[in-house]
Amino acid sequence: MRAYTSYKDIVKLLNKVNSIGLVPTMGSLHDGHLSLIKRASIENEKVIISIYVNPKQFNNTSELKKYPRDIKNDLKMLKTFNNIIIYAPNDSDVYEKGEIIKKYEFGQILKIMEGKQRPGHFDGVATIIEKLLKMFKPNNAYFGEKDFQQILLVKILVKELKLDLNVISCQTIRESDGLAMSSRNKFLNKYERKSASQLIILLTKAKKMYNTSSSEAIRDIIFKDAMSIDNFQLEYFEILNISNLLNFFEYKNEIRAFIACKIGNTRLIDNIRI
Image (cartoon, rainbow, N blue to C red; front, side, top):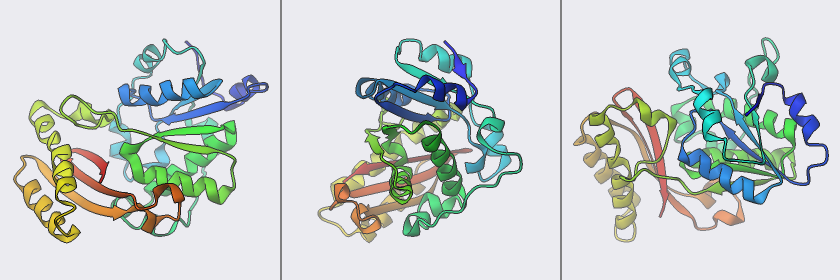
């Protein structure tokens, strides 16, 4: 299976394609990624899968260097798909020499949770997503709900750019113990992995409490519970009404609980709909 390193070579293949799906990834593929690709393959004539660890969205170089990469295994996992095109570029095919990330004005969404914890991160994400959308002009783009705040950002981006594109959010795929699938999970040792399984337990507890307790009371209890978990450093826990962040009809009255933590040296995020 071939991985194209030049987007211009891919564009030539899309000349008479009626519907194009895009699944942006940073590689180190797992079943969560494959679920996105499966859906995209059903709903589109051709699917472009980008495999690119975008340096512009990392806050420090050490995190960028240790991000898992395994293109050989990624290609092996994609062999069963027939209507896909793989884009695995070098930095030079994506960015001009010395190019800096764009600065976006996305309002409140950039000031909370990941936007607050990782300054500049979403500018880097939006920069690469905008490039991919303009390179390939997909009809549909697919993202996993584990990175729900990112999905909201992409929807704002598409609206601001006035692109004719459907941003499709797909359900988080979980391990047998409920841990959201992530490329970072492989960094956890067996003790940390046990602690990581508490993420979904904390979120589920918050969901059960929602109708009988205030958000402040729930937050206090979740923080207290998190303190009792080994190797677990809670960064934030939030309960948010999505329609208060974005005026998108599809999220009317949607409430979600969000959590981020460091377990050992590994940072994990998750969320569920309440």
